[in-house]
Amino acid sequence: MLLYRALMTLFAAKELASRLRARDGQAVCERLGRVAPIDHHPRIWLHAASNGELISARPVIDALLAQGRSLLITVNTDSARQMAESWQLSNCDVLLAPVDLPGPTSRVLRNWGITAHITLESDLWPIRILKTPGPVLVLGGRLTERSAKGWARFDRLVRQVMARVSYLSAQDSASAQRFAHAGLPKAAMGPVFDLKALYTPPTDQPDPALAKTFQRENTWLAASTHEGEDDTILAAHKAALTERPALKLILAPRHPRRAAEIAQMIRDHGLTCAQRSKGDNPAQAQVYLADTLGEMHLWYRLAGVTFVAGSLTDRGGHTPYEPVAFGSAILHGPDTGNFSSAYDRLAAANAAVCTPEATALSQALIALNTVEKQAQRGQAARHVLHQDTDLNGLMRDIIRTLDA
Image (cartoon, rainbow, N blue to C red; front, side, top):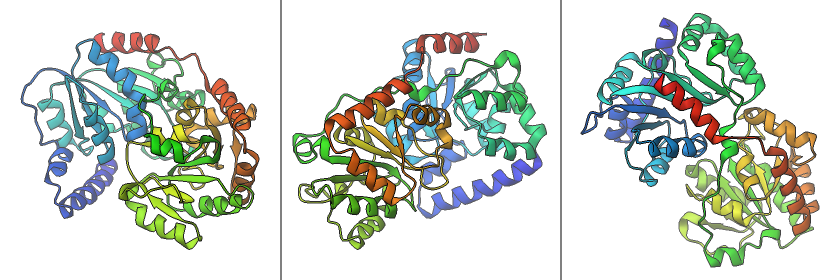
């Protein structure tokens, strides 16, 4: 525990220094747990790391609120906080998560009247879990082989944490086995259940001008790209244009702050660019730089093909469930550890294409050149990723655990 606290103190110092330099006093207060509610009634603390986890938790959030329960939602990123606040949910407060140290954690637990803690996927913060006075639930729990090896250095602490977990539904069977090996009580193990498979697309549509500009058959999306991926994507697009000159790319970076760098990269490749944040008209542009937040669903609607990014580097890949919900054909890189079970199923059914470099990516784009081919791939992926997800069954488990 001493080593963990030392490491977390260093992390906290770095985070708080960054916020202070940005003159973000509110974030500093939230990270230190120094924000208290006006009223003091019991709340369930639900934590979702960032946008993807938050979206996947929305059905659970809605179900808990429908029961009249009050929530404190915490997140790790500003963009996730903005998303949660935009939902304008009743009986629900949203904050940046406190750093996982005794003082900030205790203040949140005390000030917000926390009675239970629900956390998602791999965001397991030891002090938070150990100090929560009521049940601790982990939904869609994910523990990779690499993470398990890292945990092994804190074996005693990990076993204490696992002993405090009241209920855990793992995202895949391999994670379930690793959690059990780490000390999760057998009685706490729930069914394998991937929350992201519950994703329901928002109903709003792109404006008519965008829909007219981006014909689905001739549009592909690079979704949530990270540093080190954009160059490969742009090279592939430029190569594909020799065979498909009408092809358009919507490039949506994971972090919009990289927009200027990516815009220059687009120009360096000799491609024309329009930028969403600047209100540019994309009609004549070969690449539309979608450097905004909260609009990914619009780009999925417009794209007949989606390259799921985070998979060309060492970040484990992003969710295939969202583009599949829109019937988009799926391309991805080789690093898909975050959703290994889903991508294994896609590969076994030949329902997605792994494109490890620019040449393979351009060839896939050239091959997927008709509505029929794109729809066939998209439908195959949707069929493969369908699982017997029963939100009602999951909620029965959650409520039973919360009320035990």
